[in-house]
Image 1 (tube, rainbow, N blue to C red):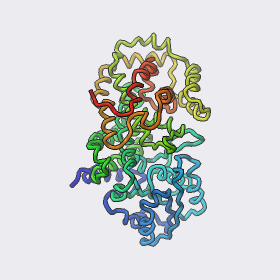
Image 2: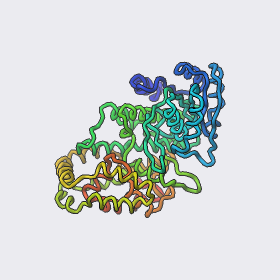
Image 3: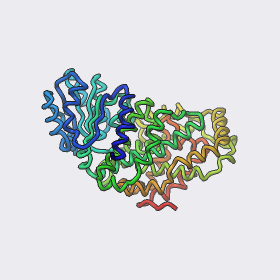
Image 4: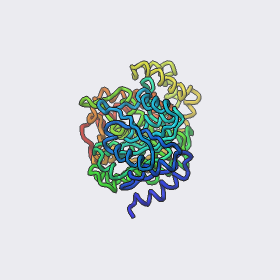
Length: 457
């Protein structure tokens, strides 16, 4: 039995049993034919609306329709064009929502990858409908998550929704997805390394404790999922299966924790800035997974810099005395985020985590006292940035800003902006609170703007 099959039994099956939302998960070769039978078990409705974009429908739409009809479902389709690619936004979900609202007896079936799944998930939730998702690429971790990361009025947020009642992922379909999409999924999964560093920080500083259910579900097997990245670039079926198991487990971890903390930290803050900006290269939108891959290396490079500092020598009183007050930070935010719509929402996030002087001084005093142990925890758990960059390159994913069309000045602006858009505690917050943010950004920029990853020293 392959390792991914054991994990399907030992990891995913218990997660399904624990889930209050998802009843069935089917991952394997040839399982596309089971879609009709699965749908018949999870819904009493007998009309199915297959929702996709043209790429997702080309990958699996016809056999999904056939399987549903064989199970005595009446079927209809709603297929969005993918030129231009659908956007991950509330507005883009409207055709799906409207179609479901028009007929309360339709069972939604999503056929596609990340954006389509999130659009259908949102539309189904808005119409109080359960839905089935058919994955067509191992490109992201949101298939089994309970949230839909979508832009609303230009600001990307994770909107609370419901996970699918069932998911079907045929490994034969995944293996025929564009190779770059495998790399995007690998990049999204790699982001769980720096996200763990951010959670370790939050736990050590008393901001947010590590969850003893979600943490081991993701972090215990993570290095195994990321091993042998060359198999991702070659669409090796076992490598893709292992990747998809990891992405699926992350989705369940987010459900169990109730937030995206198990999956998302500073790496996603960076990616979300670019996504909200509409970052494109050669006329094509940069994917979420590609942005997270680059954001992950950026986050780890900041961690490499941070753990080299002796924070036991930090002068907390001097740092607090020099720290900008809330009004000054709001002015800094406005300079870092010129889009007023994004800045207005970010200002609310900032207000939730800004520390007044007494709390700031207490936070820094605690940091100084725990730094030796915290540094050791980070050293044990994190990859060094050059190591992860090399793994991403082997998987066919980008790792440095220039590879996705981000200039040094643009990256500097992104690093200054990213910490404002979420109240979640990440490395951006510890750098701001210690007064080290600008020094860290300038120190890491040369490496982050290289065209190719540098081998670990």
